Length: 200
Image 1: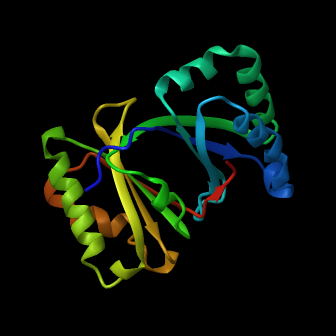
Image 2: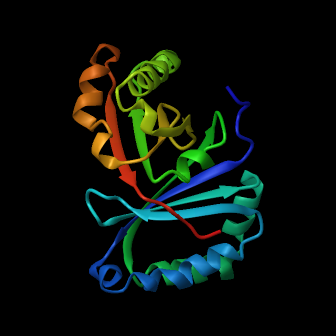
């Protein structure tokens, strides 16, 4: 296993409006602002392939200090919010420090995100190992490009797992994963799958 990824990864879930679906290029001014921010290493965007209204951004920072400096840059931050406001009506932000480089999973044809809320944080490694065994031990394991996991900084009791896939048809759904992990008494499992495009 690789050493812990040194970069801070920010994951932004935005709810897009029909304005976006009418013209997806309306997102370009917002993405252009992000590309100019000091300390931004990589950036990816894509719609949740199931609900079509959750637009997901992955933004990798050199450090959390770079991220904080951007938040303190009121003119640039306001410019980004104004650009986003033209085609979105809500957002949620997570920050994750992954155990290994997440970029191979993000560069895969499809990227699956599993957010697990743990009843017993002490069992985190057991749960992650079980999921990895479930995925890599399946008939579809040859379709997995890469995976990585890390704690969600904002909550302390959630873990996010990224898995890169070749095709969405063989990605395990949340019901199957929930049943497999029933012995661990998870409080919550959320899953999303997207086809990401790099913009940085």
